[in-house]
Length: 145
Image 1 (cartoon, rainbow, N blue to C red):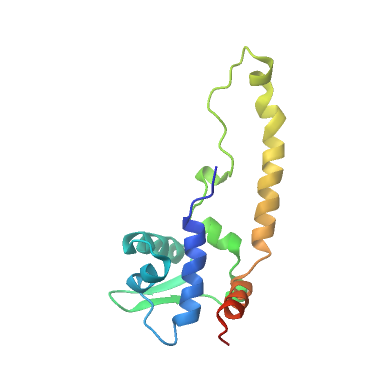
Image 2 (cartoon, rainbow, N blue to C red):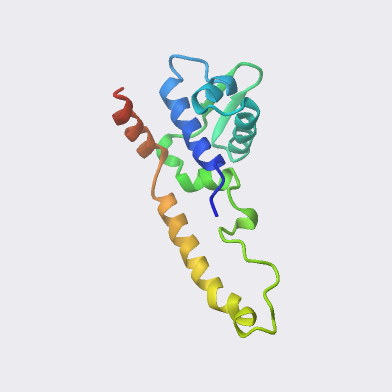
């Protein structure tokens, strides 16, 4: 099981917007060039980020900008915005465990709370990392102020 690549693409998009906004008009085509992903997919992600109030998108070739200060946007905000998991749960349980089997009959009772603990821990960690942290790391990696 993997979390959808929309999450890492969305973070990549934010890093590009912040890095290039002063030098270039940041459009879905521009972002597609950096991510090496079809612009249609980029536009879908931008639409999700816009709906969550995280980016502003100018119509046509107007470009994209971040809608809030970077220190106010967490990785959890992005994760939730791009709907990385179905129905808000990270783990999808197999549909019909065998009720005649003692394990199958009890597997939800055995695992549900534990899996929720894992998801809560992951979400807590995502909430502790802001786009300001990503910006700082990006600047360190590419050597720009």
